[in-house]
Image (cartoon, rainbow, N blue to C red; front, side, top):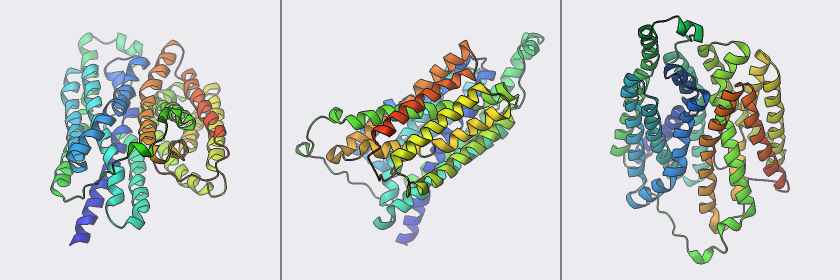
Length: 417
């Protein structure tokens, strides 16, 4: 009976990895879709990412305090309720076709996701035999990768219409006809997000009704910590590198559909399916990269992958047609190891400061809120193709961090994103 309860708990917590991965990876679908439905500039559409990723910076610490006071189970349940509430808000936001309303809904969803991410990693490790904790965590994280593959596939099928009107087409329509078209485009998000909300609510109910162990956090004695966390130079470099990396990762995915249309004339549904394939290469790349680290020191592999991505982005910016698109797909493969490798290198050797150091590296995810806006602005004053210079610069920062850590032979990859 106990084994059955533990198995159910593992399944439910693993589902959280899938749910937040699915939600975040719908953003590359929402960006071109709401740009069209709400008639936005690239800068404005990039605020979709900002609304999502700023929550990691603002909500992570309050989420931790809430769970310390009320427990991880309560935190997970509240996170799921916020997630569901945000998805249901998409219905009235689409009815009004109000972009600000969509941003509020996305921030609420992301606030819920922040609580889920804060709790899920430690929870999955205590559900069952301690010897298999790492195996369970890796298994759960694989569902996050599966969600990244499925989100653009399903979003492209159920949200994107595949119909984009040129400025000339829009000018030839009456105001009423144009509004009908835009309303129809906005309405396509309603049912998919309602369905997601219902699924999330069901999971919340199951979590609440399932007996889950509470995690006892060990109190860290101040005497164990010598010196300020800000004096850890490698940690600070790691936080900066993670900030730039997450910014690059979000930029590359979020504007992919716009890029594919610009350089190769690929319509949005087909581009969404290509993005799904790119995310699949990301997942495969993580397995291959982890294997290669048996033979190549992680900092060296990180440096190599960073430079390869700079070259691939240079190709994406300077060539045209499918060659540009394939170059951008290739970037996903070589990004695969970066988040966990930067994370592990950053907190190496921190001792009693590890928990605080980990929090700082996770907060660097806010880069995903900053760089897409910069890239959107560059696109508005030039082209979306030229704007891919922004993530190329970000990878140069990652390269610098990697070479500064080149003396390190082994690290244990303990986080993913």
